[in-house]
Image (cartoon, rainbow, N blue to C red; front, side, top):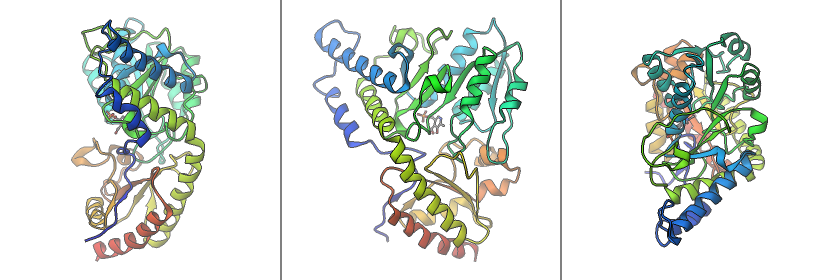
Length: 381
Ligand SMILES: Cc1ncc(COP(=O)(O)O)c(C=O)c1O
């Protein structure tokens, strides 16, 4: 048995920040009103939502009316892609994405292909980068939407979003980016990145799960996924989840206020861990790039072991990591991301993702550096 409790799976989800929880609590009990009700209890809830929207807009450098609250990152991605593809269909039938998107994007494009849309899936290079030149070449007069993730959840690649945004703007094509993994580490300034649609969810930024927002640039033609009430300008019918809306706004405010210091701190820890694991484990290699990588992401290939066995052994030592994404979509549960950057299926099976977060300390990593090479040696023998 072990007394360790070292959580290194922040890319899967984060705990709720105590400040976030404190802000949310009154909205479960005394401030429980429905924001659509006309009485004071309703007004109280509506004011909380308005204030949450204004907070998020301040950091995104946009108008509050450009923010829509949804129930998850998956839902925001679905709304962004299906909603704009269908609403702009008379303009064109061609959409562009890339091979390493999260399943909540990739599977939406597969669905739209069945609905008669033409989709280009851009390849990525060995580190997971989309080539902006390839993207520009793929745009045709029928292209209405490009969706490229800001940062990859498995290998941490930060895509050239500013360049992609400019290309889309130049060709008057809508640009959506799934920014679920990056809001803790970068100022998501809509004026800088020229995205028309941006997805952020609560569960990766120390906010509650089951809440997200979608930034939709003013004037973007988009259809709702749900039919019902007129909440969120008719784009997301359902009674508002007020506690979670208050929570995601607080979490986003904290993330966007502290991203500089946190990125520097976490990046140092990340590089320390990478350097030592590569030194101590024979033949281990880093998956994904050395530069332009999420500050908290480590994904390593350890030949001649099964990632799953390693995960279970680490779990027994009180260290919690992942074999890739919580939602792998490759064949046989292998990672479509690792398969896209390297055709060798063994890499996918023999890799683990370690993702750091707010509570990660150097002592935690020293423990991992001490036990991981020993576990690998044991598994290999
Ligand atoms: C990059 C990315 N996009 C979308 C999602 C889906 O978010 P949610 O679980 O809130 O639907 C995730 C979560 O795993 C993610 O990492």
